[in-house]
Amino acid sequence: MSDCCSRANVPLILACAGASNVGQMSNRIAVELTESEYGKLFCLAGIGGGIESFVKSAKASEDIIVLDGCPVGCARKTLENIGVAPKNAFELTAMGMQKNKTLRLDEAEVQRLVQEVKMGFARNKMAARGAGCSCCG
Image (cartoon, rainbow, N blue to C red; front, side, top):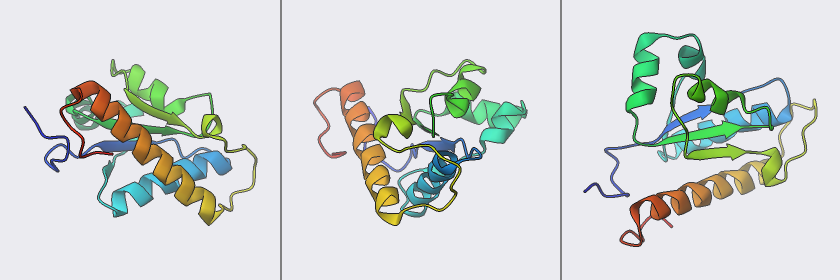
């Protein structure tokens, strides 16, 4: 049985970097999570483009964190199109961010959303693995 704290199964992070503040925030959160070694930024466009190695990696991944800015769900739908049902999909507008065309990001909101994604991912991992793992919270 694998340990939820093991770095062997680092989550892939897929973000829709759409043409709005929430898209840019999705990408920023993905970068923050990658830089803090919480997961590994992965190429959503490669999956959408049907590049075999990208699709194969996504299908083989134990954990994927999907970051969508809005209810359109481009990142989630890209995975669903290849038969992957993401268990860790986060939508920023559902987390309280208001969508607009301003591309400047509020640093306090960046940090708030990064923490919310981490907590949501940890809850999902614990639920999937049962109560035997308490290290992810």
